[in-house]
Length: 85
Image (cartoon, rainbow, N blue to C red; front, side):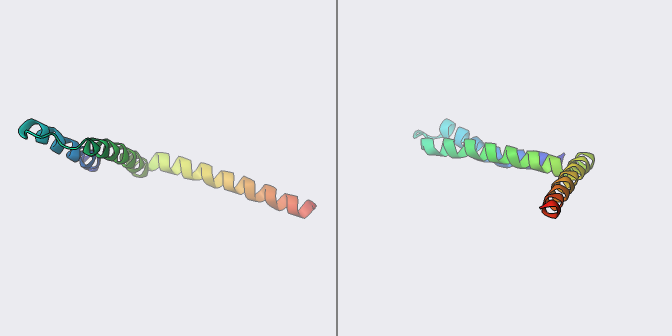
């Protein structure tokens, strides 16, 4: 759980800094910083989803077994096609 919190908080740090900057300074921060902050939140949310997938062993095993099964089917059909040709 702490890894998930760390990943999400990494995405929101810049936004928090921008909010504090806006509240304390007379000049607002550049608007491009807000775009960067939102992009970081999106990127770190995607990284968190990948981390959740990697940490969930039953789901990872189900997906890997399914992928290996698909690869076997594709390899066997490709082998059958070359043998019949």
